Length: 161
Image (cartoon, rainbow, N blue to C red; front, side, top):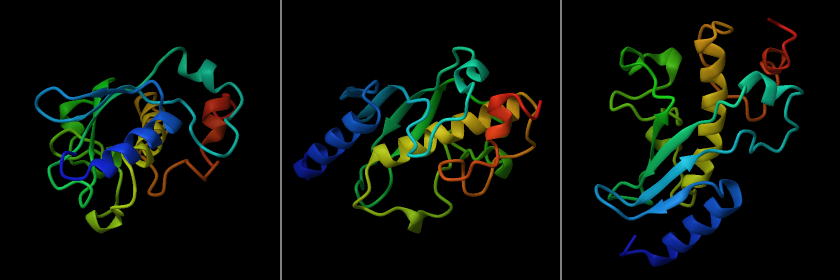
């Protein structure tokens, strides 16, 4: 962030637009964000009764920039809820071995012009799919997420329970 101040400006502006409840942190061990991700930061309309489905549940994360940023993606770590340790590296939970969210299918999927806010949108989708899995409504997370795909919306409305 010190070597590329324009990246810091871009990151802060993007996060303010997408997830204003995340707070910028500069303490050790790394610069990043912490707070609750937005419930539905997607362009398509939220399913009816989504708030009722969540029953007040929110997703608190820590976004950590790695030393090679922006050439490598930031890491997003779930704080609350914190997934079970045994779910790490299992494909169906989309978690990395270090506990961070697996939001990209490959390292080459990261575009250095992207921002952490782009990943926060994916983290919001991850949280919703996580809620479906821990409630036993789905057996695994989808390959392409729910950002553009409404096939899981029936679970949020209560129509498929």
